[in-house]
Length: 152
Image (tube, rainbow, N blue to C red; front, side, top):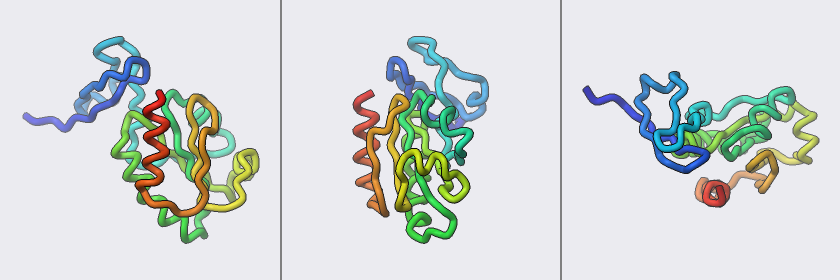
């Protein structure tokens, strides 16, 4: 019987762990160092965040986070969304992607001086490390993402 497996990289020792899909909710531990693996970061779609959940989902995240600042009426924002879905899937367990609706969450948007959308905010260890405004090619977004992951 061939079970589908995902690979989740340990945030502590960087060991790659193979986890069967049917064991994802068992709170798996790294096979090398025993650190809990962050399966919540493996979602194939960005997590919706709010002013209230921003700290927990982004600033307190143990993996790098890309926050997509968007609005439902923004055409260019809808061009960025599929690229973030792909990156979330391709880098499952190594990053988290999140969506912040700037119309519904003005406090966080203003805190990070989001004046144009789409804006991508790149966070690592609770700090903003890069900002990208406007629609960019997936390769450009991925390049900045890899810089965050490689410096872990």
